[in-house]
Length: 330
Ligand SMILES: *Cc1c(COP(=O)(O)O)cnc(C)c1O
Image 1 (spheres, rainbow, N blue to C red):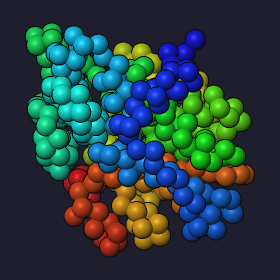
Image 2 (image 1 turned 135 degrees about the vertical axis):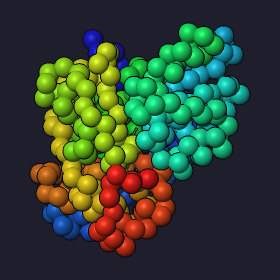
Image 3 (image 1 turned 180 degrees about the vertical axis):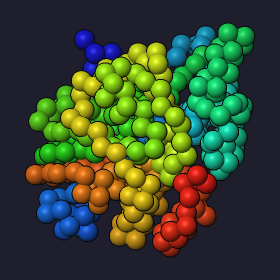
């Protein structure tokens, strides 16, 4: 039996009710017209803390026992998980320490500090940050809550899938971002559990797509971490991945990859046509449609997963500044 099933997601939903927003799903007139099928946008970038990561973090924190809560939580995060965990821990009156690599944009770091967590900057990759997490678990007794490879995190992210299939019960296709795969695992479990015929396709950037490379290789592999406009999708899946690799392999119908220009077009479309401010990772579903990489013969639900982006960079992209170098993303 998989590590997370539909019942776990329903339980998670009850546990986090009142701690997360039920975000709206709206019809995109421009995309629907362009593709000839209804295209719905799940506006999860409007979630508290600016991304869906609050769902998993809230569920994981609320599932801890009193003794664990007293010790506090620690995680390695590229930003949004850290933000979410900081917020969720603060609600419970708990200590939170977030470890991250130097690649993480400065605006994300400041936000996490403002939310009340301690921040530690270590090394040039998520793996370096993870070593610091392991040290804090061993030496200070903190409880590690990883960004994706944990059943309570996956179940929490799955609550998003429940909402999407309730809001669009006749969805033929759901597009969900994929990085470590906690989001896609949870969402696909919920969607397939409620509506087995609905397809779920993962979307990622081509620059450093660890899950796609791993699925192609048939096992978790390392990929070089590269700067990208979709910085929230950066990082590996872990060579010792326990849950999300197998879940994504078994549940996803496909994974598509996007160039930096295609992602920029997604951000621009979200802003100009939908009037939504979405970060690079959040825009990849729209980008995949615009790039012609998706075929759909029925209603589509596109997940907008986050909005935590440097606004100066956002402004340049929506103004069509073609000199933008993803190496300076964020
Ligand atoms: C974390 C994140 C993702 C990817 O989630 P995974 O569970 O790591 O696959 C997508 N979009 C945003 C905005 C995120 O913060």
